[in-house]
Every structure is written in structure tokens, then in C-alpha cells.
Length: 196
Image (tube, rainbow, N blue to C red; front, side, top):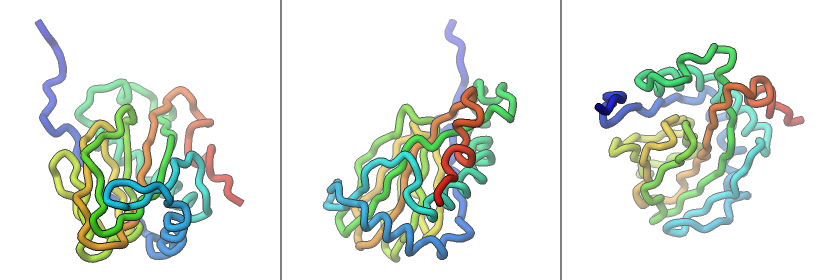
């Protein structure tokens, strides 16, 4: 007899947060993406290389804020899982920002359906979302976007971006790893808040 979790088809709703200082960092983050994005992707849009440490003070500030909302988002994303996470003492529930990259979409650009497996949590932070910009589709759910919106979701969830009808959509995407036994060295605020 097979035993297992009786999971619903859609197990985790993406978690959405609004950055309280989005307008302050917007010009700096947009400039960083525009300066660094040189890899041509679908439809002629551009992306940056993958990065592993914050490249600017504004990126560092953004990631510190993401780490402030991450515990709440993880509790909601994983509430159904009956996983090891819920048996781990809170002081060991550590996460590491493994990688991130910037995207600059032009008219006609989008992304094909994909996942971020094997990462447990992924995110998109939307720097600039002009009127008429494409939404992000996660597990067939259309999520509307605005400047300063953070969307956290499970890395295994299929997602894609329809071809853009306007220029100027700009965002930062990234992947987060669960590192419960790496303690201090893996927590964002102790590992990476060292921009001078």
C-alpha cells in the first residue's frame, strides 16, 4: 500500500510583498541592470550574468529587506508540507541567497515556461513595470506586477512571462537555498551585509 501526502494540485500560493523603499532604490537598480545586462535572451530581451554577492549598496539593502519578509513567506509556502523544516528549531532555519540576476525586457521579449529546480524558493523583484507590461504566470495563475513588488514562490513551480507588448519591464530574479545546519555563515545579514 502506498502512503504519502495527499497534496492539492496547487500546494503553495506565491507570496507577494511591496517594498517600502522601492522608489528610493529604483533608479540605482535600473541603472545596474541596464549596465550589466548583455546576454540576449528570448525576443531580444537582455539579462545579466548570475551573481552571488550584492554588487551595490542598493542591492544589499534590497536583499536585507527580502530576508526580513522571508520567514513569514516560508511559513505560508511550506505550511502544507509536513516536512523536516517544521521539526527544525527556529534558530537553525537559515537560508542563503544562492544566485541572482537582472532582466530587462523589450517589446516582444518574454520567457518560456520553466522551473528553478532544485532550489526550494525563488523570487522576482520588479523594479520597473510600465503600463501594459506582461504579468508573470506561476502555475497558471496570472500575477499582476507593479514597481517594487516582490513575488516569492516555490522553486519547483512552473512559471513564464508572456511576450512583452511594451519596452522597459525591469526586474531581479534569484534563488534561495535552505541551509539549516550552516548556522551563522549562511544567513544573509551575517554573510553579505559587508558593502562599504
